[in-house]
Length: 313
Image (cartoon, rainbow, N blue to C red):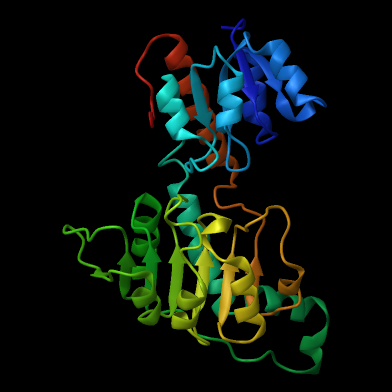
């Protein structure tokens, strides 16, 4: 398969890059100074694209690659791939579900604890020597808090199970009520936010879920509420979130994702009720390797005419 051209959209994982390089003719798109010229010169060589949460295959890229057969996402999210265009062209699409569920759910709980118990601020308090001058302020209990989850898919369910271990009542919003689930269902995100202490964003990013957390939702969550986002940055109206935190209309936030990564609103840097992470939900050695193996497995299956491991399209 070393004659099959694979376009890696951006740097994402050294193990994945090495494995692709061993098996295929790998093109590293981010190293190309003139992308239009490169695509014109190599359009007949590239049969696969590997993308992630930052870069995938939009309609323009798909149209520029007439020999493209498969887009393999090194992510569970598909918002960087034009699925409609891929369907139209008969291009297969895969992602990496399941293998990252546990890590992302673990991180969501970690963010809840970090925000409510002010773990990061407490660490800085010790390091700065302030403890010698007096005890740290009291924080907020996590056990028993009402947790509302937007999107009760694999990751949402994993978060719910973990929160239940902390005696947290669970409620949720999704497009439709899930009859097999006993958690309390709310038919709108505003209603969910009004009835929980912690609101977790865990749904896929689509046109419908863009800015699903807006001013109304934030106000419903209120000055004692906490927002946790381990989904995608554009799920949240970021300027509204920033103003709500600065004005104390929202109690706190734990954010692993942002609207314009890697750029983060500087107004958040000075707030002690916010925990900021650089999109590391699935960022463990074990999980990233499993994700990479799944990408490789899907590509090999496709070019060997075998069933895909995790097909989307």
